Image (cartoon, rainbow, N blue to C red; front, side, top):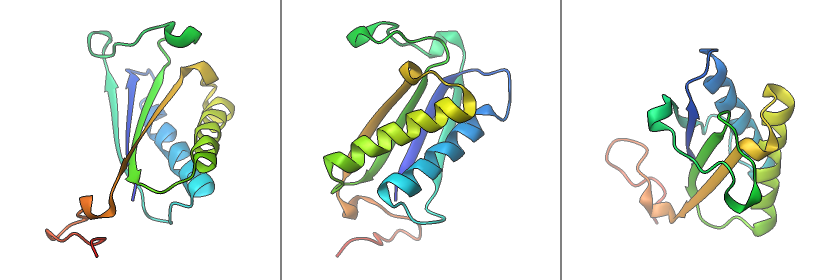
Length: 127
């Protein structure tokens, strides 16, 4: 059960961030086997005072079209799966929404299965 947070600078198209989220979900489904309907996202747009980034960290030239993606998910994916996820997300955002590859920033946060409650105050994945 991934929980996806997407942060972007305020976009002129009100449907843009939702389309970003859909592409991320599709990439997770394809690259790491996230099940159908396992789609929980927080999509946020920020003004320039609340969206701060370094435009050249690690020699990568970023623009105001930066998409910051944080995915919290169960631990256990291989390095190859993670790399495939990064590539799939970046390439789909690039091909579908013209987001530069340099403007796709992804952070995975891995947690143990018992750290989730999907509702009813129950730890559904706890053993």
